[in-house]
Length: 464
Image (cartoon, rainbow, N blue to C red; front, side, top):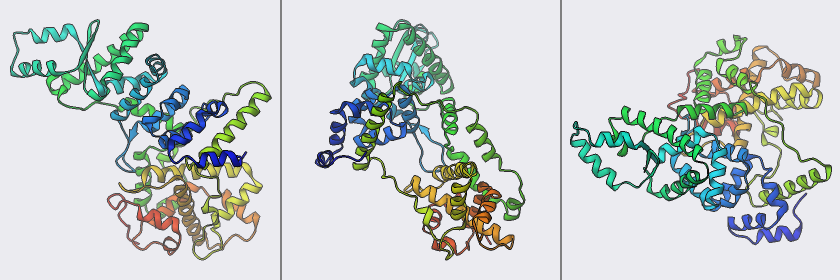
C-alpha cells in the first residue's frame, strides 16, 4: 500500500535520519511493524539512523532480531575474502545503547542473547580476576620487578569487586555502562552474574598464563574468538551465507583447475557440497503469526506502510526487476541462460527453484570472496555478475557440444535441466580469470565490474 500524499509530504520534509525515526515512533502501527521486520531490514534502518541514536529501535527489537543483527554488525572484515573478526568496540557501543534504554532492560535483553557472545564481548572490555589468587600473587615472596610494575598498573585501573572477583576495566569509554549492567545483575540475578564472571575468570586466567602474566595482559589487547565465530558461521551458512574464506577457496579452485578437469568432473567441489549439506541440516523456524484474520490483516498493513516509508527514505531499495534479466552478452538479444531460466520459471517451478538456489549461493560467493579494500559488490551487482559468469560457462558448454542457441521452449528447458549452474559458474570464472578472456567479458557491464574488483594477489590472470 503506497504512502498517501500527505504522508509522503510529511516524510519528505524530514532532512535527517531523525525524521524517519520520529515518523515511525509516532505511529503505533509502524512501531508494531518494526518487531516483524526481517533482521537485515532492521539493520539497514539502524544504519540509516545511526547506532548512537537507535536505542529506541533496539528497545523494540525482539531477541531473535537482535541476535541476527549482532551476527552482521559485530563482525568486520578488512576486505572480501578475509574472514570477519569480532569488533569489540562495536560490542561496547551496543552495551552503552542498551543501557541508555534502562539498566533493567539491558540486563534482560543481554541475558537472552547467546552467552558465548556476551562472554567474548565482556572479556574484550574487562579482566576478571579471582581476588584470593591475586592476593597470593601480590604477597608472594617470589615477587619480581614486573610485580612492582603490576602494583602501579592495578592502582591506575578502574575496577569493582563482586564477592570473590575483581572486575578490571580495559576500556574506560564503556566502563560505566558495563558496570551498571553488572551491578543490576548482582542485585536481581546473582546466579547469572556469578556464571558470567566465572566463565570470564577462567578465560582471563588462561589468557594471562599464555601471555606472560597479568602485567602483559593488562598492557595488551588480544583474545581468542574462534568458538563464537564458528557458531556464527554455522547460523549464517544455514541461511545461505558463505564464509569469506570458503568463498575465496571456491573461487581460487575454479581459477586453478583446468577447464578440462572442471568439464569432466561429475561431482560438485567439496566447498559447495559442504555448503548445501550445512544449509539443509537445520530447517528454518516457521514464522510466528498472531491468531485471527483481522490481526493478520492489520499486521500486513503495518508492514506494508513501514516498507513504503523505508523505501521512500532510501533505507531499502525500491523493488525492481534485476538488470541481469535483460543484460546482453556476445551480441545476443538475451543471455541464453536467462532465456532458459525464464522458461523454467514458467513451465517447471521445482526446476526453477533449484537453479535459483544455486544462483543465490553463487551470488553470496561473489559477495563474500571478491572485492578490494575500497570497493566490494553490492547484492544486486553480485546477483547480476553470478548470472553473467554462469552464462559464460553456458556458452562454452554449447560451443563444446557443437550446439547452437536453443530454438524453442522445450530446448531451453532441456538445457537448464541438464545444466548444473555451479559447474557452469566454475567454467565461466576460469575463463574470466584468463589473460585473454572471452569477448563477452569486455562487453558485459557485470563481468567488467567483477574483473575490475578481483584482487590480483588472489586472482592472477591465467594464461590461455
